[in-house]
Amino acid sequence: MIQKLSIIFTEQLTLNDLPTINADWIEISKFALRFDPNENERFNSVTFDKRSRIYALRMKLYVEQRRWNHYNQRPHRSAMEEIQNIVREIRDLLL
Image 1 (cartoon, one colour):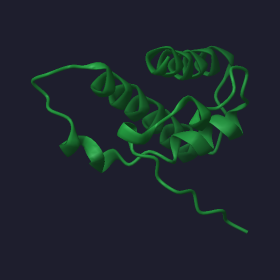
Image 2: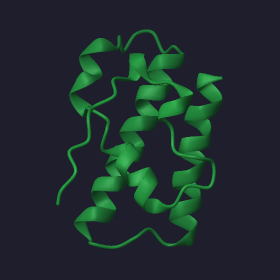
Image 3: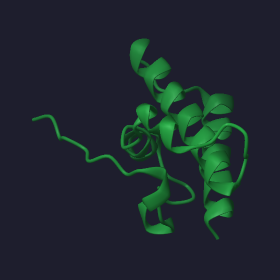
Image 4: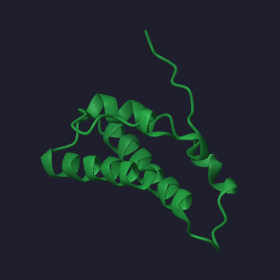
């Protein structure tokens, strides 16, 4: 059965929404899919504040999820480290 994941808008994102520090690919992938790439209209491209940075990181994570899903593979070790670093950076920005 396919689980429908609800969107979490960047402005509403909290630390509790993030995967754990050592989350596996499945957990991170589910988090990535809770992003709406169309929410970019909410962010002003002229000002690059903390929420805009979080939006950009979530977009990068979303693209990574779609890429690995397209190839029907899990990320290799170095890609997974980079993906986990994206999650850590989002976490740091929310602190």
